[in-house]
Image 1 (cartoon, rainbow, N blue to C red):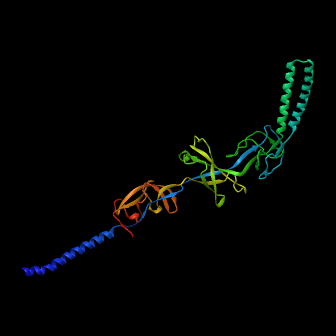
Image 2 (image 1 turned 90 degrees about the horizontal axis):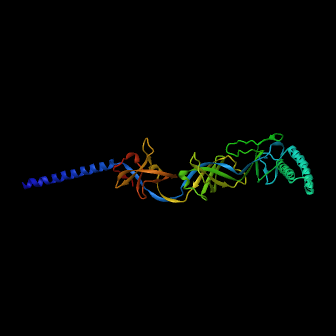
Image 3 (image 1 turned 135 degrees about the horizontal axis):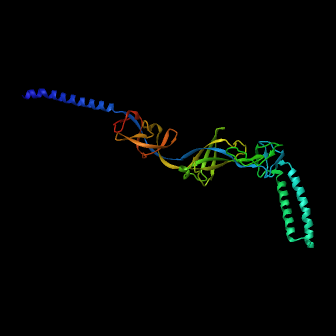
Length: 347
């Protein structure tokens, strides 16, 4: 019996070794079948949030120059696009009304001088004198008014943006309807275009983030490959009841007149720097048929799906909420895994 046992011992050892090897092969096979992924670490960084808007260029000042009384336009001294200085004569209207007013004034003035002498002598009543005096003062005011309205002067320096009527035409007090600009009546439209204002609307949701002095970057379709810097200098203190937004203004120096009123602008408002979690843009997936975005984290090689919200994209990274700094994020191989999967991590 002892001899048989001695003969069977090597066989038992062999069987044991075969079993161990088979188990090892099986474990290796199972390990190889696990999806292979690469991971990165979610990192907290400081960045400058950007709010983007579209806007329009407007003149710094704008006025439709005309008179308070109608009349024939005799002369306009400037063409469209020409510069004018404050106080320069822009246009002259016919003086027929001035001549008529002057004749009327001189006639009533003589009457007033005559009744003044009679009053001094006590030949007329105080009531008669007051009546003539009132007519004289009204005639004098009328003549001064007509005199002022035969000549039109520039109230500020700028350019003639538009001649609204031409020489020889009769000027009436009718509004010049030009969408987005002044609708007042006028002979010429005067604009101050250095500097210019860029206006854009901010919704009430973002309004608490906007304040005077914030830096902005401005681009224009009509000016390629250039970005201009400025600061917010005015926020309208009321919201539209229709759009629930308010107008925000930025002033741009314009010595070369490259910015024209009416130009379309892209505005990026730079908010104060904040810290946030960054992950690779390629790690983000979207649930089919929804707007829900998610990524996969890894804990002890076990996959967990986490819903996140993208805040902004910077290069090939995106700022997200919903995941903490230091989390292990699956960057590649995410199409092979699902929630709860066990994976292999590439070195």
